Image (cartoon, rainbow, N blue to C red; front, side):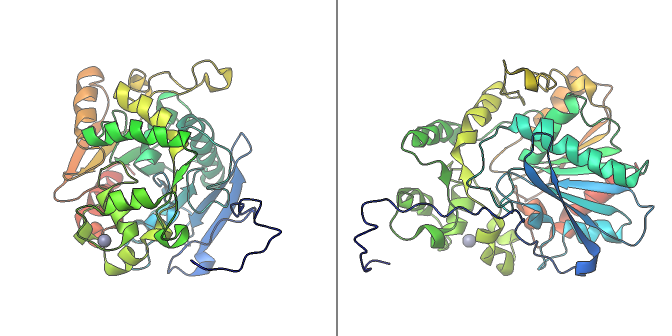
Length: 380
Ligand SMILES: [Zn+2]
């Protein structure tokens, strides 16, 4: 709005950002029978409110699969109503899917306004608590984990800390123990850290919410350079990956419906997480942020150095065109083969796929999920 009536009593104070204080998670978008979707709100060990969702198959003997989303997205990414999604495929193949909304989920009511955290918190509190909760429910049935991006990175820290022992198998998409970012991404990450000093603490993805003229306008303008798609949300994700210069998906792999929903599927990206991400990227390994705080002692200082603690088969997946994490997964396979040859680690590259389209893509059920089912099927 360009013109508006001015209320003299309010002009002296800057507008407050609206804070959502409700306790409930934003409803999941799915086409399952609602009676089959059991939403279980719970708190991590440090008191942070999270969400766990169990999809009931009517069969209590199935192996369970915990699914972890990436940072700023949510469990919605595995339930897309417009495609044959990962949950559909797991249900049809005889598994019981469980979805965790960890503290970086855009479904959580405090997403933008809650207290700051690092990936240490996700690895130490969120993932182990979710696994404990599921185990209390499923007893001695096998439990697998399928994890995407930062969800997988945090899982690698939980695993090498010995906090989630005895999993039946782990599938990691995009990145695991050895994160390597594109050169321009790495450089711009330090530039973005500078934005923190100008009091920008999140990069929004929904142009409709921030408006035409705001402090974020230069970010959207930068993202629109050389973009072939006119949608500003798509530009900031596909063409710029929150201003980092990377790309999050192969554009033509998204259905029109998914493309329209991008602003709902992605939340704003917090800039205050960048120092931890930067440290991880420079180390080419998942490293703990908290060096002196004794509460984080259970986590290894360097997850790659503690990889001998991994006690389960691991499938590393990556699209051949991953524009964010490049060949991190192949690197991980090679390093583990040299340093920990006793581990059961397999790497599969998905030809022509980028990063998020391995789950969001309209053809993912055909091109990607079969590899996940093969891996789980051999170990169930
Ligand atoms: Zn687009």
